[in-house]
Amino acid sequence: MPSGYYDLYAEAGSLFIIKLNFLDANGVSANLAYTVNNSYYIPEELKAIGWTEVTLITAKLQVKKKPTADGSDTTLIEFKTGAGATNPIEFIDTHLDTSGNPINDHNILIYTTNPNFAVGTHFYDLEMTFRGKKSTGPLTDIVLRILQGRFTLTPQVTG
Image (cartoon, rainbow, N blue to C red; front, side, top):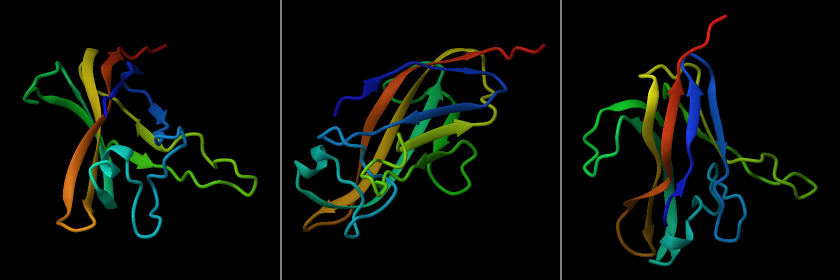
């Protein structure tokens, strides 16, 4: 799955929030937060290679000074799923209300109360890791790059 490209902007020392909507192959908001029949959402590209179950979905967004093929550049800030993350990524419930409408307009929330790293234009990518398996076989992790682009941090403006 090719990743999307989107540039992000934030002001140093201020609240940064981005809401994303990860859609399935039919253009419907994928439910990343809950399991159905003991499996999380399975992307079409994983179904195509025989996956029948996903037991865990995690996400990580890293901002680096410059993109490198081997990922060796220093990470300036990292957002990730999981308890206790300083800069969290949360999967949001996309169940439908009683009228059949999604209860949220997004299913991924990324935020920090203080994006405090070097002012300038940097690069980021958002990856999701799906842990799952085919009908027979061991659990395997597959990482999909979902989004990438420039991340520009501007100086804090004080009055």
